[in-house]
Image (tube, rainbow over all chains, first blue to last red; front, side):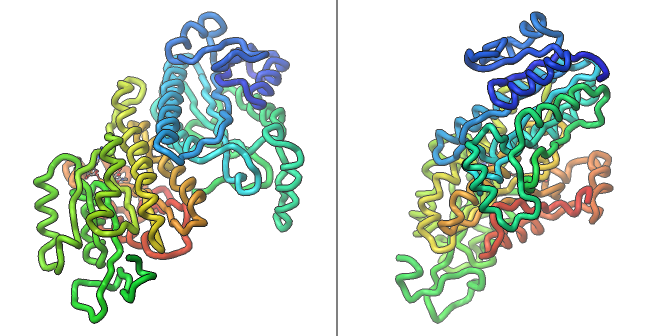
Length: 225
Length: 270
Ligand SMILES: NC(=O)c1ccc[n+]([C@@H]2O[C@H](COP(=O)([O-])OP(=O)(O)OC[C@H]3O[C@@H](n4cnc5c(N)ncnc54)[C@H](OP(=O)(O)O)[C@@H]3O)[C@@H](O)[C@H]2O)c1
């Protein structure tokens, strides 16, 4: 490990966010967890991230790494109201990523990670995920990363296939059984394994990644365009 | 009346302007942002291929009117064949009402080409939120709302289809275009979602992602501003609006493509 990092996990109230927090803390890093509503194991509760970030930074930081956690929830586009909600969530997330990147600018070697839910497994598993949010943020991250690299911030995403903890074991078993002819049958990946992978990236200094979207999953092809 | 009920041949694409022994019931397509650039080329191509075409303009009724007259020259029943409609993607009301207006005028709506879009470029970190939210609202919100509003009319037809004009920026990212790329990426996702959701009901939904296309806007740029893009393009030239229109026509024709985003980028960085 290069050095101890101060990490903020936004929307940490998810199996992956909690696993990452545990993994980072055990490795000796300083971790601050955030959620929109009060939950066990969460340090900060708040909804107005762009306006509160600096306050959190002076209380718990200065942060060198900010991770935007996975968000659960079926994102459907059946009605104009659904569209409004997706649009609102996207605008909010963009504003939050912008504020984070601004804060890490000119702090040497900042990293911002955005965790996106891969959704093509939905054909086999009732996972609550749709491609609007993830595809939109892929466009955003690849664009903004090119703008902020010169300020010493590396913005990247993980495109994460469903995690074991997101669904009942029986559903995983059915899905696996139904994929009889699949060459390398997918395995449900545990949150802690993905957390270990991300922890390793977070620990690296001068990581050779900016504007990248890394697919994370075992045995299932990434959602293609 | 539908094509299944009547002894009428359903066209296009071989229903050019000439007379036919059998009455022709033409398919109808709605193209948004049809008065200039890529949209104008799409409208021109679809009219000449025999579609009934409704196209939209935002504010310049005189420009739309002039284009309408040009399109109608030499076409029989021209008022039934081509019509212009005003719409602002930012207005939920005008978006909600548009498909019904088109269906009322032509008697049917078979296809929708979501071409209209805008960009507002600049450094994202210093950009006012109102500016980038406007882009998201029109490009993603307006387009998605219009598509939902059109679904009932589309699903009444035997082979309905939607084409979304996204952008290479939404897939590869582009500095200075964060909100534009976000909105176009959202449309790529929306295309996948819609194709998955309504595929079983026969709706075909696909997108195109144009790269650098020659439009009026590009004509005023200095070559130094885009030479590096052409250098990284296998075909070593810009795309033409007619080439984008051909891809749209291809996606509108029956086929096995679904939820796909076709890059029309001359082999950019490939
Ligand atoms: N040109 C390129 O290189 C390129 C590359 C990739 C993707 N694209 C996409 O291709 C599409 C057409 O591009 P273009 O270059 O032909 O653009 P353009 O010349 O600027 O034309 C855009 C069209 O969209 C309409 N429009 C814009 N905002 C609207 C709104 N809020 N409500 C309703 N209509 C609106 C405009 O209507 P008014 O004239 O009335 O404003 C115009 O007809 C766009 O979606 C664009 O993002 C273009």
